[in-house]
Length: 182
Image 1 (cartoon, one colour):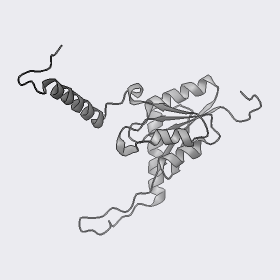
Image 2 (spheres, rainbow, N blue to C red; image 1 turned 180 degrees about the vertical axis):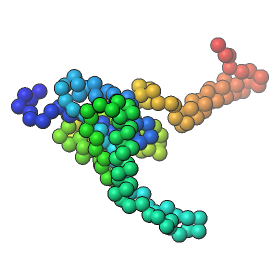
Image 3 (cartoon, rainbow, N blue to C red; image 1 turned 45 degrees about the vertical axis):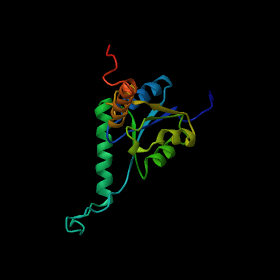
Image 4 (cartoon, one colour; image 1 turned 120 degrees about the vertical axis):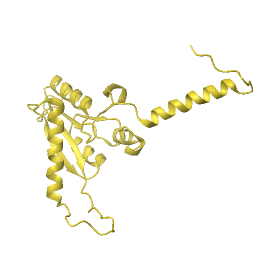
């Protein structure tokens, strides 16, 4: 380790708006404490387009970017405080744009990037994989089994399809013969 380094050891952690990433946040704080460093909690946000009414015209009130940004920042601060407590000491950063770009920019010069694995295919099938190859620092990905997230619908459906395939294979060509249950 370079002892001449001037900035503190830094862990950047992506905070999901859906789950608040409690395991990733907790792990990042513990890791930063081990190295006498700091944690930067990052969330990306995008400006929503104007909502349309049933007639197809835009709504009368179009939210201003500043209002949307302030609301997103307030939610991020509240999410981090809900997970770590009010006196957490974590730097909170809200970045306009996509998740990948926001995390990669925040991780430039950091020592470690921590994220939760995406919970569904819609969140980006190779999101974590792409972060690993693009980041300028090591990346830690918290899998759902560690973070305690409920199993996704896709995982439940896959397991049910697998059980059905095994059952069908066990009965193939043998009418009346079923698989044994133990």
